[in-house]
Length: 286
Image (cartoon, rainbow, N blue to C red; front, top):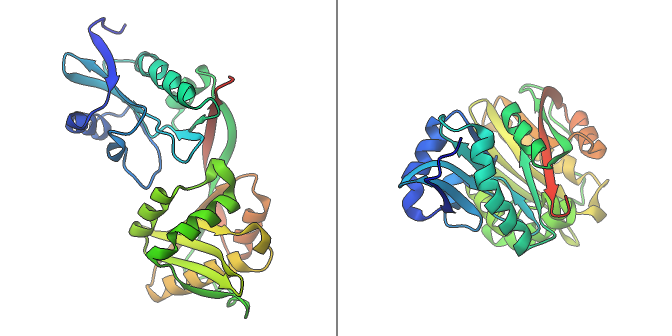
């Protein structure tokens, strides 16, 4: 049972060290796959801690970014508390603030941990869809080059505003990456390119490196340009570039119900790994 001495309060910069200790030393931690670490969000809206006379025993963060979507960036607690105990104390404050500030907001989480999934389901979250992981082994034949009317070039920092607009058009508000997120993605990329035709920018990709090779972190094509070979052109150029670097494997995530995306990756030599990531969502009317 939670001690009466515990106080729910907003996280402040001085909490950084203690929250870091929880995140890196506690097994009971959910962290969102993000361009920013959970600690980078300290000071943002809707970041809470459970304070016991100056000692932090749990933390929770779900700042709204992009607009109308608040991903749960962090939930962590010490071992002497149960997950439901720590959650109930922090969730009440976070939930109230999120929906009071924006009744349209959806609070969302991606989690493969069963203990956290149980907590989400008990709090009114529903399974929206699954994200599946695909991989393209190194050494496979290279895709064909881009169609003549599509030009691929390196992404520049000054492209990011247009990339952000393209991202919203391609993915819609729920899966949209904000300008801040895309700036961080760009700064961490090993290869980032845009596709253009005579009308302007029609697609982009951002890829990152990892221990096993590379990950296609983001691929987007304007709706009116889909079906023209833009996605294939961007991924094909990426694969040829990665082969120059002798990168072994290339991985990518996509929604399990995104038929067009799955078909594209299959044509390009990707296969499912069998791994998946459930997406849970709770709206204000729930």
